[in-house]
Amino acid sequence: MTNTVTLLGLESSCDDTAAAVVRHTPGSAPEILSSVVAGQTALHADFGGVVPEIAARAHTEKLDICVEEALLQADMRLSDLDGIAVTAGPGLIGGVVAGVMCAKGLAAGSGLPLIGVNHLAGHALTPRLTDQVRFPYLILLVSGGHCQFLIAKGPDSFTRLGGTIDDAPGEAFDKTAKLLGLPQPGGPAVEQEARAGDPKRFRFPRPLLDRPGCDMSFSGLKTALLRQRDSLVAEHGGLHRADRTDLCAGFQAAIADVLAEKSRRALLEYIHLSPQAPTLAVAGGVAANMTIRHALETICEEEGAMFLAPPLALCTDNAAMIAWAGIERFRAGGRDDMSLQARPRWPLDQKAPAMLGSGKKGAKA
Ligand code: KG4
Ligand code: ZN
Image (cartoon, rainbow, N blue to C red; front, side):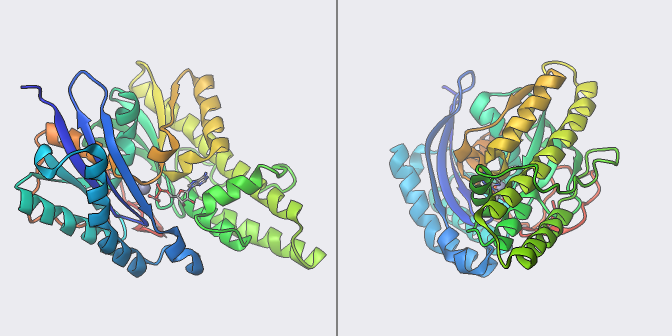
């Protein structure tokens, strides 16, 4: 008997419907046999953000199609699997319910075990899927709804060192894009504009750098950007192309500086606790940003830590990370039954005090 585990993963907590098949044999690297992602960008484009009701309906329509496609690409049937892993929270509740219901149906029909997965654990465990990183490592989880530093000590053991007290950086990117008339999701659009811009022309604030610790704040940045935009419009009667690219570059530089400096502090705190082979990994959609990646890489070089960033397709929401987090839970004996609940809130570190603020995914986990 090989002890190989193969799981189907389902993800539907925000605006991507995804299904994937991942196989793992102890002693070898996990294999992503398929990873299907159906995005909903076009459906939400007219609204300047994710509309929960529209997202939930689209997930309901797309989940079974994604599952069929993932099984087809992996050349597998349900009977070849060892279980079904599904995001059970945190997230937009309608979408999470759609995923959990689909997974329950598949598990009931096939007799396979059901494994509920925390979406944030999916992101946080991705460095083990891609690079087989050993515990404990430091992870910066930075997405549209979340921003926190965690020490990952085991598949179900995380200590939070700090996080945002208001907006998540992805949310700030999305709002900035909206203020400048750029498409959603804002992160890639702002990054693209910033490439042609001068990051020094506008000096945006670096919130909370003057305070000790790893907590962050990003909501003031969009207000600063709004003021700057309005004063440019009042001066010139509109925005020139260079104004927009410079605003994007200045805004992105501010986010990168804050994340880099707070990462340095988190690294020092974590290295103090676990000095062997320190590693900072980054995960979540904002980890796709090259300026931010380079800033974090530099900090790691300076502090003697290894820097790890997953491939772009595994930074943003996907189901391979859910299947992998499911495999980690499954190996530890984790199973759920038909009473598995969809949870809008589900902090990874249950002992840490709740964060303030609420983002597009609801209250910060
Ligand atoms: O992890 P993710 O796919 O979904 C959440 O769990 O939130 O992250 C999506 C977020 C969006 O806010 C998007 O604007 C941001 O990640 N994002 C980026 C980039 N690509 C995606 N932000 C900055 N630069 C990027 N290149
Ligand atoms: Zn996510």
